[in-house]
Image 1: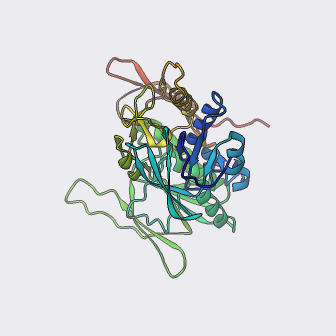
Image 2: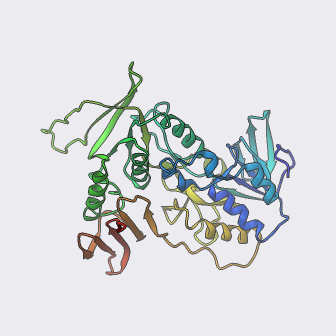
Image 3: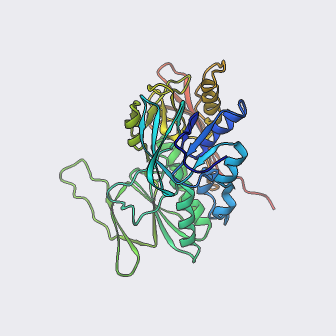
Length: 400
């Protein structure tokens, strides 16, 4: 199928060529080989597994190793129209029309849609203290490739801001690749926005035992590039609630690179244009059973979507979400999407962390097992029913 812009394209249009967008295409094509599908993406549309980015540098995997199929190859295989390097500048939900701008064309173009799927993901948060021109993120394969090239010149010092799952995984990956790592977080321990202190204390101990420097309870106040071509990271302890306690200012960290892992936001431009209900932090509001938005014939999936006020930013549910959207678009009978919190696994080798359910740092956490090798805790709801379980184990050391 053509990869050029067209004024007459109609049928199903998908915005975003990440895992979510391609899953929708796979699901539709498994049920209907002929219905017209157009994929609009700001990049080249290559298919790759984004979670691999947090462990690829230590494995010496290049961008070419991670790409499963180029956008053109994948579009030809799926028999779709790919509009690569194309931005959606406006959505007219009343007339079901998209306005597009493309690097290949100077003039804007318009295409119609019968059904529209928003799969454009979410964007990294860059606080004012982390200028985008000086700070990396590992949320897209193109930026990953650029960072990898910079790190390939030899051992370097990298500061990672944000010790959630992604930041903690990247820290170990870069350490294994031979780099010096400083991990900085507002909280006292990694994964503190997900798990209780008794659990996060074990994670802290494990990553520090590897040689990762962890600065918990600190906020980054600025990043500047000095005449020595190094990055100077200013940071300070979180301000005390006491008016009599002065904040201690520390000497800046001097590093080669800074990576931001400070969360995701949904860009407001397209949801606003489409008139769909959304929140920048959690995503576009959809019907829990059909994944339809409040606008007629518009669906949402993946990182840009929320169900019952909760963001859906894990890979595991995407296939089921895509299958539901495919059935609903094709008007097949279906039971509706049933959202099940996925099993969450930290990919670090220094410690095994597995979470099921919907964890939160506070609440009625009860210890089920507590030994040197294993910690198991259950989170009980108001009815004393287990709503989440975390299992933390020491790594298994192979015997000679």
